[in-house]
Image 1 (cartoon, helix red, strand yellow):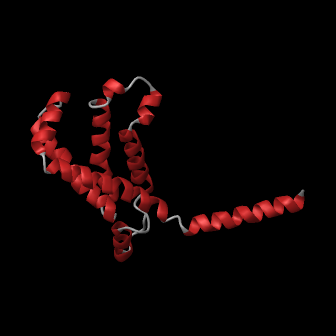
Image 2 (tube, one colour):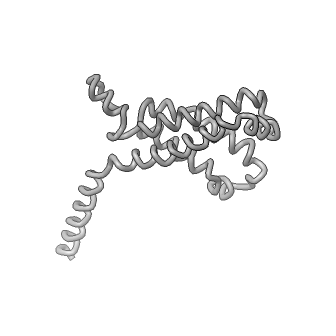
Image 3 (tube, helix red, strand yellow):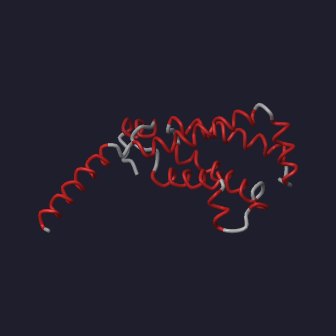
Length: 155
């Protein structure tokens, strides 16, 4: 039994060592996944503001024209910042707000319980954005390079 446990522990330690070496990959993949998505949707919205404005009108969003521009800009700029990992935590804030508003307006009629909520794409994006806001941009980011260049301690 002790020999088996020693082998299990050795496999566990090897696996953890591998995971430690690729730890940088998780925040990079998260940033790229949501960043590219928001860049794309922001670009589309920015190039068809009247359509977005009309959609916001149907949802009863106040000042739909202004909010269409704000959402398009925050998605395009915020998504771009996430992709390169610059001002990463700050960039998540308007996108998090946008996803909360989307759930409370466009998706509210389809929300009948917890399982509906976790099934929404917007909720998944919200969770990934919150994770990025908490864990930060990771080692493969402009934020990391700037902190290193300025001699700042990363958090």
